[in-house]
Image: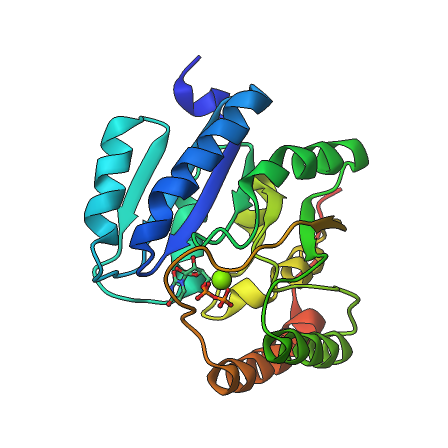
Length: 240
Ligand code: UDP
Ligand code: MG
């Protein structure tokens, strides 16, 4: 069997100026998944970093064949980085995690176990005790409310950076700039099942957030209207 067929879990992390988070990210992912005991890979996608992340990623990839580094020519955004990582991923299951370690790679085995136990196509984290400022928590809660209302959904924390998917469902999803905020809904739209599971959360370990409140809010609202339209128009044919 080739290596390609044996990878169980690909972990995809978008990286935009996260130089001081990369070593802990790789270390903690490696420790957690070695203890888990199944074959895995970590796909780091450099979204046009200029802080030395790019070179650091290459060093980490050279030191461990399970760590892979992809580099964008220029900054293209978090959705683009995830899309590139999803396409490069070779695992039967594909996880996503932010490089800033606000969620825990150590939670991945539990999420996979839940996905498998329930036969779901995706498991979405819920940041249980969220370690962000009250303003971030408030605006995120408000955004989730608006998004759920517009898309007739019940996703508690669509922005949680920790999620696991079956690769087959990701391959069906139509990706767009901003799609990373709608992945659970996109999975359901394409016939997949989604479960939501509490995960741990921590303050950003190093570096700084790449988003402000208002730029994100307006883009997300526009995208929510487009997703609502897509929900009504998606093709759902099946051969018998
Ligand atoms: N990110 C990216 N491209 C961007 C913005 C962010 O790849 O244009 C990455 C970033 O490095 C991090 C993740 O996406 O791994 C989430 O970004 P961030 O932590 O800044 O978002 P927040 O948690 O503050 O919402
Ligand atoms: Mg973050």
